[in-house]
Length: 304
Image (tube, rainbow, N blue to C red):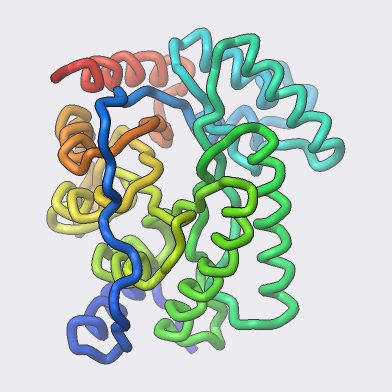
């Protein structure tokens, strides 16, 4: 069986949806109703410093941990951090999480959210049981940190799972995981990632999940389409978390700088509330680029 690329998989599923080949039950999730005038604030994803958190050998003077990451975020003027699960230590994770929580308190930082590696395309069985237990474990840890939302993913379906079955599995597994997360007061936010970078495909899933503890992660850099800004406008009404990248891509893979003002306007039009999380992925040295992009984003957030 030939494995489809993300774009091919999304296009295949979108075509099936357009042709009515996939069952479309009544929508469970409606656009989120939000009131008030809470200002948007800026957070920093630990993934922005992945080179130094994950890929630099321990003992190297350039290596950092999440405690140092929090220090840097505070130095750069962020109001919060997103301590990605990938960068917690393999041992003593609970003690480390408590230390990180105290560090954030002393720095005046919120923990805006978290992120988990997961695969919800799996069918029922032992592998799925392990996956759900993994998610539940991190829900508990992030709840202790005070994170209100966690980024989760659809994942890549195994070779023996057809794409339409993978969609059904994602919906069912999100239902289960959101029920678990809700017991800890944590919302799970499905990201437009993997083969869910087609707007019609991810909205098909979103509209089938029925849980008050579910929403989407609005990732500004993950759509590869003729008009990614239009796709983001369609996704924004369901967003409970927003990740902003510094670049955008069209359906031919051509890169262009992100228009921060336009992105923030999309979020405001949808009445999004909460943190805007800078997730830096570009090639420039993050120590030079992140403070500059943070200032640009802050200006966009301050504009009326």
